[in-house]
Length: 476
Ligand code: GDG
Image 1 (cartoon, rainbow, N blue to C red):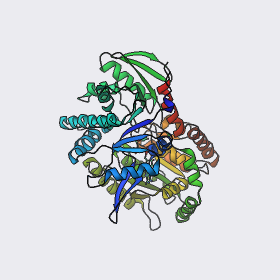
Image 2: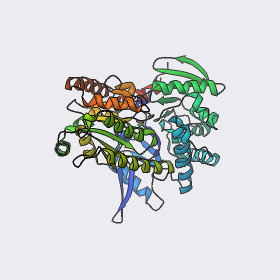
Image 3: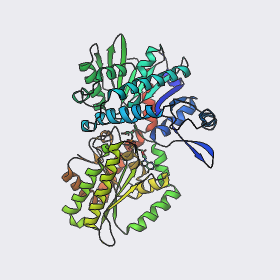
């Protein structure tokens, strides 16, 4: 049996884990933030890994020199796959974000299926595969990430690469009946079957995929179903399919939230609240995150339970995202209007119900808000996992936060016993959950939060990484 745990890791993702910029005429390259970078960076360092992706900057940047500098400073290497503006438009904004993203989040109405975009998606996926084959060594473990790069595995096989090929999907996999609507469903399924290991976020995603593959692609045979994984046979190969819920570095959030800087920032926030409870929402600007529905539920709570007036505010942080895509621009306008309308309806001279902030906060300010908010309202219409929910719990160091969580977030599988689960389309029930959370006794808050924190501590991101890489070595 080969032990994949010692192999060099070659990670492939749409974006490299860096931010490249220019300051006062000097180019800078710094590690990006986000769960995946935090999770993978230590392992990449330990195994002198290689990360391949689009650098996210134009050709004017001295990319070679910047990547060398990054490798020296961070202990693992990067290789860039450049994209032209047209490719960025068609492969990334077009096919990935206007076809696969909404389809995989069950939002067929947002889908735009364009044959030209699909062709560019395939071309860019082959380009990624060629860069991988130029850099890969015989003993590498190749790990491709997410919906933008589904086709890379099959292309690598066509290039006769014999290394183990693994893929992890960060977003949900839809039910077969929905997936069937994709005009290129066969090719996409066949591409997924090009990997040796397929990882999904939840058991539901894994089942959706296995059912779609077995029912829509001829020649797929399910040879074993176990609790931990399924084995499929296709064209003489065996494909292992598992679910590996991604997580966060619990200790980092727990310790970060206890730090002096966060404590000071949290104290300052608290002083300004004058005894009011804070309900927190944190999301990338995205129509899958259910922000308009959340505003309506909060409005309904104020209408239905007047005892909440002046005693609770919703702080909604929205991080700008995909700003070039029209649906995202429309959503921004909708949110501006809704927040304005609700505030005009309920505000008093010393209180406004919704504080809507459209920008990214630094980590200390984010953790301070996690720590201070008595309630988190995280209600995506559909979400692969939702790391914000886990970050909120890990930062709730006084054990007294209440998490209201959508039952359609992958995180509901792990946090369902401690959170108040809601259907985000059910405005009435979400309003009731806000009321219940507001009046929840301290003992119940503590009991629920302790459960969730214990779960995240046990199943943290290091555990996720280990179980995924271990699954590649198992042969049963
Ligand atoms: C995709 C899937 C899956 C947010 N605001 C600020 C900020 N953030 C950080 C959070 C968190 C991240 O952004 C958002 O992660 P999510 O998991 O919630 O959502 P997606 O971006 O949609 O991620 C998702 C994930 O991939 C991993 O597999 O869970 O389902 O859609 O880490 O902390 N960070 C800072 N300032 C902010 O204002 N610094």
